[in-house]
Amino acid sequence: MKLTRININFGYNKRLNQKLNEKLDKSEQTASIKLIRTLNSSCNETESSINQLENPSQGGIDRNQEQINILLNYFIPAKATLCSLVDRFFPELSFGIRTIDELDREDTERGALYQSIPKQEADKLCYRWRESLFNILEKNIATKEALSTPNRLCVAGVEYDEEDGENQEVLTKFEPSSSSPKSLDDVVGLEKTIKKIKNYLIFPLENPQEAQKREEDYGIKVPNFSVFFGPPGCGKTMLAQAISAQTGCDMYMLDLSQVGSSYVNGTVINIRKAFDEVEKIAKHSDKPVILFMDEMDSLLSKREGSLSQCKEDDKVVNAILPLLSDTFDKNILVIGATNMYNSLDSALIRRIKFGAYIGLPSEEEIKKLLIKRLTSFKMGVTLAQNEKEIQQIAKSLTGYSPSNIVDMVSQTSEIACENQRELKKEDFDVVLKEGNWQKIDESEYLPENKAQKKVVKGFLENK
Image (cartoon, rainbow, N blue to C red):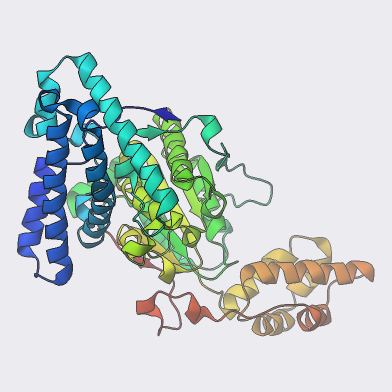
């Protein structure tokens, strides 16, 4: 395992701590707020004690190692729990993530210590601090499942060599095929949603100067994090592909259901690797790079409280939230897709700047889809031109996803091919009757506040 100095502080930041106290003073003094205040005070006092024990004038790490370890056994899970609570109640603070540029070294005891001793000794001291921290952390995870597993704050000083993990490739570049959409005009239906996508996503990508002026005049910002959600098979991935094709922006696919790791913190590391890789690509691109995160609900589901912090999924949520905050400033546009919107963590939902519900097609939209598919090959044209029969077929297919409908057309074509003739309406009747198709209950996929509405074509949150 390779240890690298990234942060010289474990997490204390005087300015950030002051902001937290201001938030706490203005908040209703509930049990949760009182707990945050108590934990914060206790963590600051504990870290101050650790700092003093590390000071060479007080004996340093070598002499005080046992006491430091005892304090760390308390400090690590307490700090992780504090960060989780603060990020839940005050997500705008990004309390759990501190980088070296954000630390107020001159205002901390550790900063004063580092300024008072030679750099070589300071580096050595920092390395020992990280080594001790990680050893205790690994011991806690291995022996006490109930302890809160720390988020990025606790592992900020740890990097893995390739042999320490599975080194799996989790990011793939989208390469259009002949069947991929060339633009949003290739998408059947979803007119209202597509109009919003063109206005809030396509327009700023194609007209950055005009988008800048629109933000100055009206305060309409470019949404750096968008999410398409709804039942499976309704075209969420296809929409992202269409956006990439129409704007000429390269798109990289990150399937969150495939990035899991059996190693401790391995999933978090895979996620961060993917974001780092896209960031490097975006630095050398003259257009924004699209990062498409599929199957979001597989790893970014709701956190259930401190006892669930030992789950890998919870660590992923903690790690990914700050990565989303400044993506557009790094020339990255993140688009996510999920079937289960209601299962997403609330902190993640608050960061969605643009969301679009991609639901089941209406009868008229099914009709358009059928005509488009049938006219793409010779033996389907005659049926596509039969207005009455197409309308009847479309009516019988309401409640099915576009993906299922496309599969039905393919199976109908196989029946016609076997009989060496054109497609008939009766072929659809056979496929529908004999196939293992199931209609979708759309209410299961609507956001909780939209569940009573029969038709939801999109929504916009511009924060």
